[in-house]
Image (cartoon, rainbow over all chains, first blue to last red; front, side):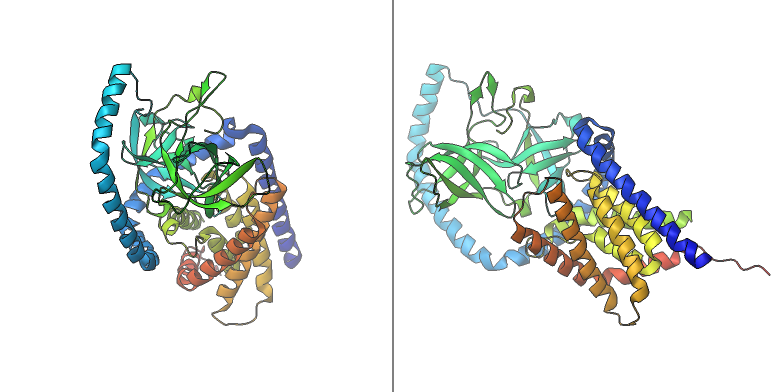
Length: 294
Length: 169
């Protein structure tokens, strides 16, 4: 009797748990971000954030050490490339000083206002997404600090920001940021050399792509200057884009051969090394004006 | 009983913390381990289908709440994984210490593949098939590498928190 009833009770338990799981999936689909499950998720993330921060603080040196070991073969080559780039940039800076002075004077004269200067909220990266199928990070700033869903997140300095991604979930003490390499990420970009625009999309482990570039655009990958891609401002029906213009997204790494006669596409090497990301800045843009992509 | 629940909850929270911090940086060819799959399989092997399914459901739900994916998907996957491994253990007769490693590797690959298939059916999976296969295999390999380190720890925790039987004459 005992041997027969135990498997039956186990089967009943599994059927009940599977039914509850299916009910949760259905409810989550129906309710979306406004439902009780999303609220429970935010509560769980709020509870986990301080623990993640503590563990990150303690274990980051260990992770950096092993991460550095993995990148060791490419470090020497990167070092030589960077030395060459520094020499080139120093030459350019020497020549650009005069041009910048003239530009500043002209801007003052015309009364131009810089659009790329929104207030920023600094934050520390305290965690990564737990799944292999989403590319997100958790940061230490939340709604208590003024972070809201949709705000752009950058790394680097305020004068040369590099795009990290955008805020997708906010709790009072933390926020989840969808990285630009995530499959569901898209942002409007502009090539630095030709000013042609296109749509940059994340592709997970592969380099992001930028499509929708006019077919006749000349993209010279072997030139002295690297072809970089920046965010671009736009306005549709009175709604401004989500990202301020001029944020560096990445550098064109290859041109994708397309059969489409109207447009071409390229792949980008992101400007941010996501495996070594430690500090970020959240731009306090007005999200009521934000478009759907960027 | 409460001591056991607290012990397993601590294991699940620790696994989630490690996965979202340390193992976010320590990737094997771009892939991180699935520690909760490992925990579920290990507990199912040690304690049977009942506890395997329950721990799988609870730990899967905990992981779902930290993801921006449909909630309930990991809970469904780990419930079935815990139950299947727990039922399978009655057929294991070999005392080899390699058995947990092999079961974890096969179970993880099967679990990740199941998760991917259900995600495709829900229209929530946009990766290429080659990437999906690569993730399933590398995750299984990573979990297998971690098993000899983590399985003895999990066994000690589950055995240490097991309710003591009192025999009265």
